[in-house]
Image 1 (tube, rainbow, N blue to C red):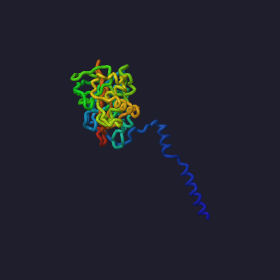
Image 2 (spheres, rainbow, N blue to C red):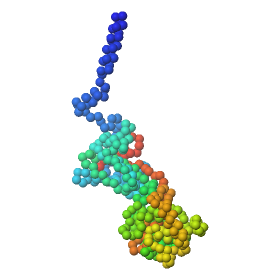
Image 3 (cartoon, rainbow, N blue to C red):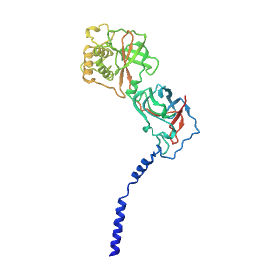
Amino acid sequence: MKKLTLAILAIFALIFFACDVEPAGENLEAIAGKSNLKAPKNNNSIEFDFSEECLKSEAILYAGQNIEVGKVTVSEAEGNYLITYEITNDEWCITETHLSVVNAPEEFPITNAGNPKNGDFEYSDDFECEKTITYEVPVEKGPYIAAHAVVECVSNSPETIVANLPETIEFCTIDQGPDAYLNITIGDGLLSGLYGAWCIDNDSPIQLNNCYTADVYSLNEELPDGAFEYPENFDLVNWLLNQNVVGELSPSSGEAYTYGDLQFAIWKLLDDIEDESCEECSLGSFTPDHVDELAALAQDNGVDFTPECGDVTGVILFPEAVQPLIIPISLECSPCEETAWADGCDFPGNNWATYFEYTN
């Protein structure tokens, strides 16, 4: 009995003292607090290869490892680096950036495998579709720079297509009909091609077989003051452009809509034109009842219309002193997203991420 009692007491003492032990983490924190020690940022055994030389003030920005889409340049001003991402390839734009600037490569946020954790970089932003982005970074942060970006093809979405429209274009008028009021050709740039165009201000003339220079506007941009009587109706016109009504049968008359019907309906939505005012409009054949039908359909269905992939979006061409036009641009969206790095030395991991050392 005595031996049993002693055994019980021993077990009790063991349990009591075991429960009184402090957690290991708290002890380490206490020790670190007393000694002012700091854990290293990258607690791994990865080593950088310093035999590589990557001194530069300008680095090529590569997407998908081998597509040159732009450059990253570095300059100094008033104690700061000015680090600029610039897209020089018209087919791409930036939707994300991640930038890290450190005193030594080991200070970059990296995984235990030696790959950069760009989500932990000090400077990060999201964008719709930008061509140029600049960061101001204190020089004291160090000379080593890792510049990462996510880039998209400009045809990736309606937003990126519209954001990359040119500011001006040159176009020439060719002829009229049968599917559009004017057929025009645009020579160079992202909009080059043949288009069926529609006039959007009956008060101004335009000539066939002439060439013009025009400012380019998307429908979500601020348009010139006073250019249109009812600019709030462009969403209705945009809806009409997506219905392909020319050649379709009118439910009321059973006859086909003509390009003249659609042109007059567009004028009626944007202008203050009346039926009797169009005797000399050079519209070809049109039927007033068809015009009213198309305008009513747009008013019933096109309010706040926003085109999506597979639709067309109206783009306004605004030449000086002549009739402005609207042309339908196809939103042929295709998934096209790549990661991009400013060229330089390799990180020690197994991906293709790179960094460089700034020198002026």
